[in-house]
Length: 246
Image 1: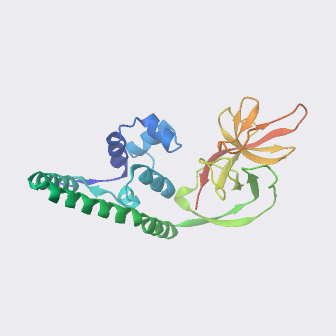
Image 2: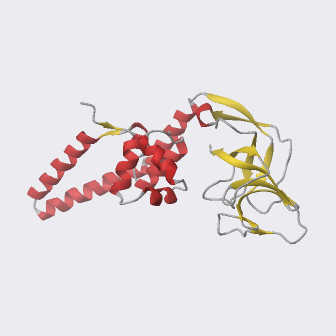
Image 3: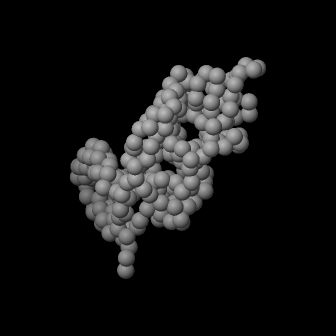
């Protein structure tokens, strides 16, 4: 019987182990409840960096989240260890505890090398060459450049089905959702819904921000939201349908 537990079941397992609802987990990893539901049902595969983020949240080696673990085997090891612990005297129980703490520390130290291996795995994936045409500010708006025409290599399975343009984020005002250097997949539209992240052309420069009722929101509390005076220009270029992070 195959007892291998893979990513969809593992998300569900660790979510419940940490007493989290789908809504609570979604909030912690800046996703929607729908995304968590699709992960757990296997309808949607996560991106590499998403696996790393959720593994870090649960304190699990990213390799385990990616390639799974044998639940039956792990459960048997834990059960045997607990039974032995009950039979040991207190001083020996403390020695076992100290040893397990050392093992945990060494494992945590090795997570960085695990991440490197995951990056290597990504590098070996099939990629497509796309052109980034502009820079969009997630800062003060001073960064703006058209016709950048910079080639980027992006794993084919991380490219959305529909988009019109690529742009690169400059700045950190949209962290933790968007990071400096992220590649944005933009769908051209003048109609952006309240709460959506879009690219906007303003009299102060081009911005990637979250549209609110009457202003543009910065997700990073270290940056101010953008409010406009009467007569100032602000128009939507497009909505961010997805993004890629190296």
